[in-house]
Image 1 (cartoon, rainbow over the protein chains, first blue to last red):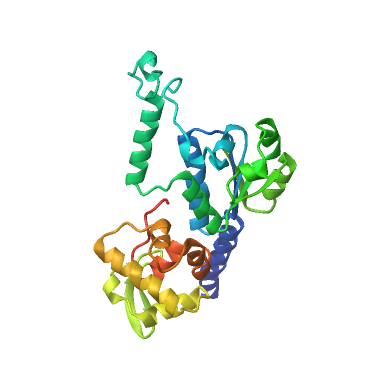
Image 2: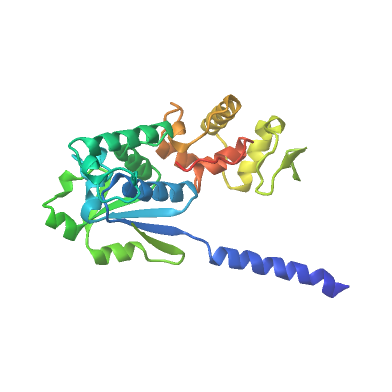
Length: 178
Length: 103
């Protein structure tokens, strides 16, 4: 009788320990692309992590830097040419007409507004307010001749790839690359 | 469905501990639930909880952004009031369903 009573208790304790060990505690999201949909994917995931109580760090590199550059952040576009997911029936010659990409991006932003999705700069403010940290890649910033003052105020620092890996230190961390 | 007995009353909750009937909610219940997650509810907390309950009744889909625009707290204060997942924790304490928002 005692055996029967004790077993389930021990089992329960094990489950709790395992659950805690495998818990996701931190995400490092690397955003290397500057297209509207790629940047939003990164922002939604970072903000979503914070909403779940998971620590979030973001590292923007190469064209991803557009998302945190003052002059460009709220003017990101989606590609209408060379994008197989964008209305495949559309002939490339039409999709490449001047102004078409701006129109498509405008339509996409309108749909996002309907879903209560904030603009890029507001989204980054939300992530910053939630305790998320935002960094820019030194190599890419040098390449594009961008300085700290060119970036949004929420950008904490321009860091090297080594510093970036240091951000991912600790048990229960995942790196997501976009 | 499970039953949770707190603050001298029994309420119906789902497997994750969210109230299944928001009308069973009382401020005392919220206080007891908050104590379990180490939060001591202040007037500011209750302002947030009441706002959430009012919006839920109106059928509004809740998000962190909407709370930030509520005029009660900004997003930073919201995270500070309910550390470790503000919208989920505050919804639970407000006796409303788990938020289905991605933003």
